[in-house]
Length: 77
Image (tube, rainbow, N blue to C red; front, side):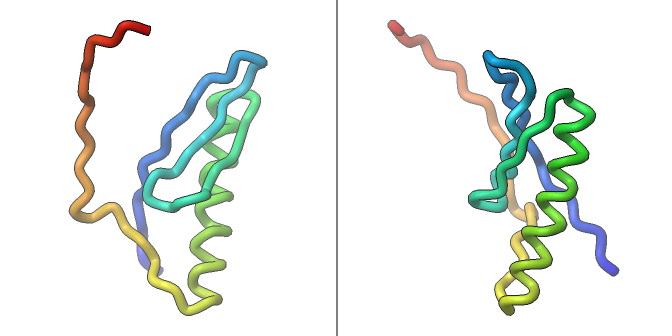
């Protein structure tokens, strides 16, 4: 079994809880009431996503050659 690592983004929602996005897996989104729950839900969502890709014979995306960079801009909003 191969160990894969995926970056997740957690967004705190106004109504409570956290939405989780997995940038390397388009459409892989989940939610948790707490950060710990959101992380657990993300792991489950990623596992199911990868299982579906494997069952359909599709390529499993990795984060190799993926770089993260934050950009700051001034905006009149």
